[in-house]
Length: 419
Image 1 (cartoon, rainbow, N blue to C red):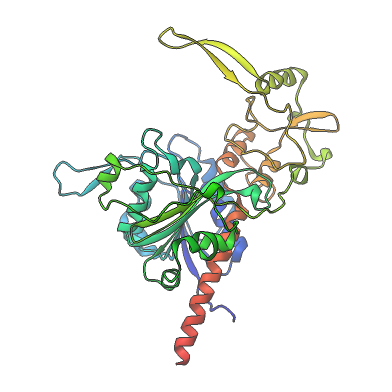
Image 2: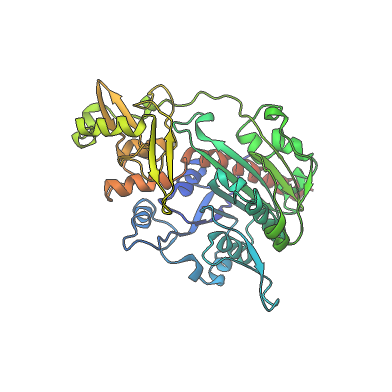
């Protein structure tokens, strides 16, 4: 059936250069209406990412202010159906306030608490978030604590959720970029009621939000499937005492969760050579000098270097070798914010016997952005913004999955109207 003319109102938090928005608009521009977006970089006088966002998007309110200073009623008035955002992996420990009257307090400056505040005031049906995959294991001395705090936070806010670590290259894209995505949905909406009929394991492997969008093999890797576990109901208790080995996929329903190490069904990735510019379009400044080539031979080579600690202790720093150039027949490695600088993680390609950096346009292509999306800022900032960005096409796939869910809602409404 055809969709109704209803739109999904979207708030985009920590918007960067607009990867979430671009992905959703590529999925269905007529469905997703980004009504408010916030991007603010506290440590910089220039707001390059925000300026890039404004250049590329006209509609909706563009907010360039500290998210913690945005009033609660702004989120309430926006009345979003969907909240999206990529946020940093921080310390999510919590403590009870001294007076006991203010409930639980988290560390100041932790952006996840701003997400919590938005959800408390806006009550969206859906939430789609992205983070680095180490979130599932942090902190190192209490593995899984931070993610467990997040899960119980969503539970207290009346959401159930799924999570999945996705490597973009394993689903056909040009970059081996692993990120954890979280899709939360209000308890008792139609999607939640439908999912409640399935076992948690079936949702992880076949029936869930991620399983239908990003298919996986029927059995977990090395039989890594947990039993159904129950979270402590007190976030302070979780923060102080709880740890758990969360796997790459999982579901949390009413404070209980199950997690598994899923394996993707193989999809041929896009090789690096397919996103490269024609060499006639590459400026000479991106090619390595002989001095640069020697520098990278050292940086990417195996090494064992004696160092001295701040206390005077001598030790050896060891590092394994890597290929002197990136294979053109494979997808690119994970792009970092230091891309384009003289360090080990920078991509180096060799074409027609000459070695060079990736250009900013090629880095945009690695993440699925349109060519020259970040034009207007320095090359250094273009590389930095792409190192912070997500793979747009993954969001497009998720946007189409949300559209499927909404189409089912429309279908049920029509059936009720016909009764």
